[in-house]
Length: 240
Image (cartoon, rainbow, N blue to C red):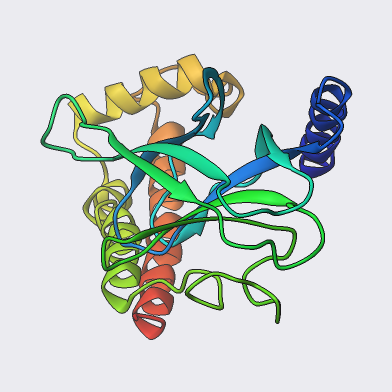
Protein backbone atom coordinates (compact mmCIF):
# COMPACT_ATOMS: atom_id res chain seq x y z
CA UNK A 1 0.00 0.00 0.00
CA UNK A 2 1.27 3.58 -0.74
CA UNK A 3 1.17 4.73 2.89
CA UNK A 4 3.46 1.84 3.83
CA UNK A 5 5.97 3.04 1.23
CA UNK A 6 5.76 6.57 2.63
CA UNK A 7 6.24 5.27 6.16
CA UNK A 8 9.19 3.18 5.04
CA UNK A 9 10.79 6.17 3.33
CA UNK A 10 10.27 8.31 6.43
CA UNK A 11 11.87 5.69 8.68
CA UNK A 12 14.83 5.48 6.29
CA UNK A 13 15.24 9.25 6.35
CA UNK A 14 14.99 9.39 10.12
CA UNK A 15 17.58 6.63 10.49
CA UNK A 16 19.86 8.50 8.10
CA UNK A 17 19.45 11.73 10.01
CA UNK A 18 19.89 10.00 13.35
CA UNK A 19 23.24 8.58 12.28
CA UNK A 20 24.67 12.13 12.10
CA UNK A 21 22.95 13.49 15.22
CA UNK A 22 24.88 14.54 18.34
CA UNK A 23 24.38 12.05 21.13
CA UNK A 24 22.10 14.37 23.09
CA UNK A 25 19.73 15.02 20.17
CA UNK A 26 17.07 13.11 18.26
CA UNK A 27 16.08 13.39 14.60
CA UNK A 28 12.34 14.00 14.65
CA UNK A 29 9.70 14.28 11.96
CA UNK A 30 7.86 17.57 11.48
CA UNK A 31 4.22 18.25 10.71
CA UNK A 32 1.53 20.93 10.73
CA UNK A 33 -2.14 20.87 11.66
CA UNK A 34 -4.46 23.47 10.16
CA UNK A 35 -7.48 24.18 12.37
CA UNK A 36 -8.59 27.06 10.14
CA UNK A 37 -10.76 27.52 7.05
CA UNK A 38 -7.82 28.98 5.12
CA UNK A 39 -5.24 27.10 3.05
CA UNK A 40 -1.68 27.11 4.30
CA UNK A 41 0.73 27.47 1.36
CA UNK A 42 3.62 25.95 3.24
CA UNK A 43 5.60 25.84 6.47
CA UNK A 44 9.27 25.49 7.31
CA UNK A 45 11.08 24.86 10.59
CA UNK A 46 14.52 26.48 10.84
CA UNK A 47 17.22 25.90 13.41
CA UNK A 48 17.90 29.33 15.02
CA UNK A 49 21.57 28.38 15.37
CA UNK A 50 21.98 27.31 11.73
CA UNK A 51 19.68 28.64 8.99
CA UNK A 52 20.80 25.85 6.68
CA UNK A 53 19.14 23.25 8.90
CA UNK A 54 15.52 23.29 7.80
CA UNK A 55 12.57 20.90 7.63
CA UNK A 56 9.12 21.59 6.31
CA UNK A 57 6.24 20.62 4.17
CA UNK A 58 3.84 21.31 1.34
CA UNK A 59 0.51 23.17 1.44
CA UNK A 60 -2.01 22.18 4.10
CA UNK A 61 -5.67 22.39 3.15
CA UNK A 62 -8.27 23.77 5.60
CA UNK A 63 -9.10 21.58 8.60
CA UNK A 64 -6.42 18.98 7.87
CA UNK A 65 -2.93 17.80 8.74
CA UNK A 66 0.25 17.84 6.67
CA UNK A 67 1.43 14.31 7.35
CA UNK A 68 4.93 13.73 8.73
CA UNK A 69 8.10 14.86 6.99
CA UNK A 70 11.78 14.57 7.76
CA UNK A 71 13.72 15.85 9.72
CA UNK A 72 14.63 18.23 12.52
CA UNK A 73 17.09 17.87 15.41
CA UNK A 74 15.77 18.37 18.94
CA UNK A 75 17.36 17.75 22.35
CA UNK A 76 16.49 14.25 23.52
CA UNK A 77 15.54 15.60 26.95
CA UNK A 78 13.51 18.75 27.35
CA UNK A 79 15.09 21.75 29.02
CA UNK A 80 14.04 25.39 29.28
CA UNK A 81 15.07 27.63 26.39
CA UNK A 82 14.71 25.30 23.39
CA UNK A 83 13.82 27.65 20.55
CA UNK A 84 12.56 26.91 17.05
CA UNK A 85 12.02 29.27 14.14
CA UNK A 86 8.94 28.77 11.97
CA UNK A 87 8.31 30.29 8.55
CA UNK A 88 4.85 29.93 7.00
CA UNK A 89 2.64 31.47 4.33
CA UNK A 90 -1.11 31.58 3.80
CA UNK A 91 -2.60 31.08 0.35
CA UNK A 92 -4.25 34.15 -1.18
CA UNK A 93 -5.93 33.62 -4.54
CA UNK A 94 -5.83 37.33 -5.39
CA UNK A 95 -2.22 37.99 -4.39
CA UNK A 96 0.62 37.14 -6.77
CA UNK A 97 3.36 37.01 -4.13
CA UNK A 98 2.60 35.67 -0.69
CA UNK A 99 4.26 37.29 2.30
CA UNK A 100 5.84 34.81 4.68
CA UNK A 101 5.31 35.06 8.42
CA UNK A 102 8.21 34.40 10.76
CA UNK A 103 7.83 33.15 14.30
CA UNK A 104 10.35 32.20 16.97
CA UNK A 105 8.85 29.93 19.61
CA UNK A 106 10.15 28.33 22.79
CA UNK A 107 9.10 24.70 23.12
CA UNK A 108 7.04 23.76 26.17
CA UNK A 109 7.92 20.58 28.09
CA UNK A 110 7.59 17.34 26.13
CA UNK A 111 4.49 15.46 27.34
CA UNK A 112 6.45 12.18 27.38
CA UNK A 113 10.12 11.31 27.79
CA UNK A 114 10.96 11.96 24.11
CA UNK A 115 10.42 14.82 21.62
CA UNK A 116 8.60 12.58 19.11
CA UNK A 117 7.40 14.99 16.39
CA UNK A 118 7.76 18.74 15.96
CA UNK A 119 4.30 20.27 15.43
CA UNK A 120 3.09 23.61 14.08
CA UNK A 121 -0.55 24.21 15.00
CA UNK A 122 -2.55 26.95 13.27
CA UNK A 123 -5.74 28.18 14.94
CA UNK A 124 -8.80 30.04 13.72
CA UNK A 125 -8.12 33.00 16.02
CA UNK A 126 -4.81 33.62 14.22
CA UNK A 127 -2.58 32.16 16.90
CA UNK A 128 0.13 29.59 16.14
CA UNK A 129 1.45 27.01 18.57
CA UNK A 130 4.75 25.15 18.21
CA UNK A 131 5.46 22.10 20.33
CA UNK A 132 7.15 18.71 20.34
CA UNK A 133 5.10 15.66 21.19
CA UNK A 134 5.22 11.91 20.65
CA UNK A 135 1.43 11.72 21.11
CA UNK A 136 -1.28 13.01 18.74
CA UNK A 137 -4.26 15.31 19.28
CA UNK A 138 -6.89 13.44 21.25
CA UNK A 139 -4.39 11.60 23.42
CA UNK A 140 -4.78 12.34 27.16
CA UNK A 141 -1.25 13.75 27.27
CA UNK A 142 -1.57 15.91 24.15
CA UNK A 143 -0.22 19.36 25.12
CA UNK A 144 -1.89 21.41 22.38
CA UNK A 145 -4.49 24.11 23.04
CA UNK A 146 -7.19 22.08 21.28
CA UNK A 147 -7.47 18.46 22.39
CA UNK A 148 -8.73 17.07 19.08
CA UNK A 149 -8.00 16.96 15.35
CA UNK A 150 -9.51 19.70 13.15
CA UNK A 151 -13.30 19.71 12.71
CA UNK A 152 -14.49 21.36 9.46
CA UNK A 153 -16.95 24.20 9.90
CA UNK A 154 -20.42 23.95 8.38
CA UNK A 155 -19.51 26.80 6.04
CA UNK A 156 -16.49 24.88 4.71
CA UNK A 157 -18.43 21.62 4.35
CA UNK A 158 -21.16 23.49 2.50
CA UNK A 159 -18.57 24.99 0.16
CA UNK A 160 -17.21 21.54 -0.73
CA UNK A 161 -20.74 20.20 -1.09
CA UNK A 162 -21.69 23.00 -3.48
CA UNK A 163 -18.65 22.32 -5.67
CA UNK A 164 -19.63 18.66 -5.99
CA UNK A 165 -23.30 19.49 -6.57
CA UNK A 166 -22.53 22.05 -9.27
CA UNK A 167 -20.15 19.64 -11.01
CA UNK A 168 -22.92 17.06 -11.40
CA UNK A 169 -25.69 19.57 -12.20
CA UNK A 170 -23.52 21.18 -14.88
CA UNK A 171 -23.73 18.00 -16.98
CA UNK A 172 -27.53 17.62 -16.93
CA UNK A 173 -28.24 19.79 -20.01
CA UNK A 174 -25.72 17.84 -22.09
CA UNK A 175 -27.11 14.48 -20.99
CA UNK A 176 -30.61 15.65 -21.90
CA UNK A 177 -29.30 16.79 -25.27
CA UNK A 178 -27.67 13.39 -25.84
CA UNK A 179 -30.96 11.70 -25.01
CA UNK A 180 -32.90 13.92 -27.41
CA UNK A 181 -30.27 13.67 -30.15
CA UNK A 182 -27.19 15.85 -30.56
CA UNK A 183 -27.08 18.40 -33.41
CA UNK A 184 -24.61 17.60 -36.23
CA UNK A 185 -21.82 19.87 -34.93
CA UNK A 186 -21.83 18.34 -31.44
CA UNK A 187 -22.35 14.87 -32.90
CA UNK A 188 -19.22 15.25 -34.98
CA UNK A 189 -17.23 16.59 -32.03
CA UNK A 190 -18.34 13.66 -29.87
CA UNK A 191 -17.33 11.28 -32.64
CA UNK A 192 -13.86 12.83 -32.97
CA UNK A 193 -13.26 12.73 -29.23
CA UNK A 194 -14.29 9.09 -28.95
CA UNK A 195 -12.33 8.08 -32.02
CA UNK A 196 -9.23 9.66 -30.48
CA UNK A 197 -9.58 8.54 -26.86
CA UNK A 198 -11.96 5.55 -27.01
CA UNK A 199 -11.50 4.03 -30.48
CA UNK A 200 -12.99 0.68 -29.50
CA UNK A 201 -16.28 2.34 -28.56
CA UNK A 202 -16.85 3.53 -32.16
CA UNK A 203 -15.09 0.80 -34.12
CA UNK A 204 -18.37 -0.69 -35.41
CA UNK A 205 -19.66 2.61 -36.83
CA UNK A 206 -18.72 4.29 -40.13
CA UNK A 207 -18.94 7.90 -38.99
CA UNK A 208 -20.65 10.46 -36.81
CA UNK A 209 -23.81 10.33 -38.93
CA UNK A 210 -24.12 6.55 -38.53
CA UNK A 211 -27.62 5.86 -37.07
CA UNK A 212 -26.08 3.27 -34.77
CA UNK A 213 -23.70 5.84 -33.30
CA UNK A 214 -26.55 8.30 -32.72
CA UNK A 215 -28.62 5.60 -31.02
CA UNK A 216 -25.70 4.62 -28.79
CA UNK A 217 -25.34 8.23 -27.68
CA UNK A 218 -29.07 8.49 -26.95
CA UNK A 219 -28.90 5.38 -24.79
CA UNK A 220 -25.78 6.56 -22.95
CA UNK A 221 -27.30 10.01 -22.44
CA UNK A 222 -30.39 8.51 -20.84
CA UNK A 223 -28.31 6.31 -18.53
CA UNK A 224 -25.99 9.18 -17.58
CA UNK A 225 -28.96 11.47 -16.94
CA UNK A 226 -30.58 8.93 -14.62
CA UNK A 227 -27.31 8.45 -12.69
CA UNK A 228 -26.77 12.18 -12.36
CA UNK A 229 -30.30 12.81 -11.15
CA UNK A 230 -29.92 10.04 -8.59
CA UNK A 231 -26.59 11.47 -7.43
CA UNK A 232 -28.12 14.94 -7.04
CA UNK A 233 -30.91 13.49 -4.92
CA UNK A 234 -28.35 11.80 -2.72
CA UNK A 235 -26.31 15.02 -2.44
CA UNK A 236 -29.44 16.93 -1.47
CA UNK A 237 -30.11 14.38 1.26
CA UNK A 238 -26.68 14.92 2.83
CA UNK A 239 -26.43 18.70 2.43
CA UNK A 240 -24.61 20.10 5.49
